[in-house]
Amino acid sequence: MSRRQAFVRAILALTATAGAMAGPAALHVWAQQTVWKKVPAIVLVAPEQDPRLQVAREAVDFWNRTFSEIGTPFRLGPAVQSKEAVPVSYLRTLSEQVSPVAWFDFPESIQRLPGDIIVVLSDGDIVSFAAHSRSAEKVLIAIRSHRLLPTALPNVYRNVIAHELGHAVGLGHNSDPTMLMCGRPAPCRPDAFRSDTERFFPLTEQEKAQLLRTYPTTWTSR
Ligand SMILES: [Zn+2]
Image (cartoon, rainbow, N blue to C red; front, side, top):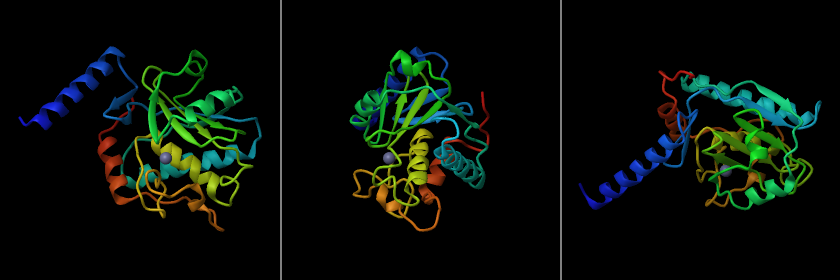
């Protein structure tokens, strides 16, 4: 075994130990990748009747169509609305630390929120993010206010939600500004999603292959 192989093995052993200590996991964390072992329930945090809820539901539908096209049985759960408030100050703190995917131990106030993937349709001046919690087996997504740039530009908001959901199912960034998951360290920013026609940006073939490896045809919800 080379020194590099030994190093990788040691890291994997550590990761496995951390996972075992957390008990049976619905959200399996493996080398910085999120792998759901069950259909994650989606909770959209926004006031009732808020028009952003429909856009978020369309982003969830986009992902479920994509999973169907790829050939994986994995799906995102139905999206339900919640009025639970998440303080903007906490979202801002996380927003400044996430790049692009990071792991946190959420405070009790976040851990007790219903749902596995919590999408806060925020009114805050924050950078949108997806933060993952090992201990809570949750992903907390927060979306920048739709009244601010660049989220206010046509077609941007829906793609920002879809992009963060991409992180929530295990994808990282690519460097192609015509693709949904473009992001740091590439220079593309959410304004690249601007379009006069409403459409979701696509995934790369590599990302589709990665998703099918992560959620193979034999995948079943626990
Ligand atoms: Zn990102």
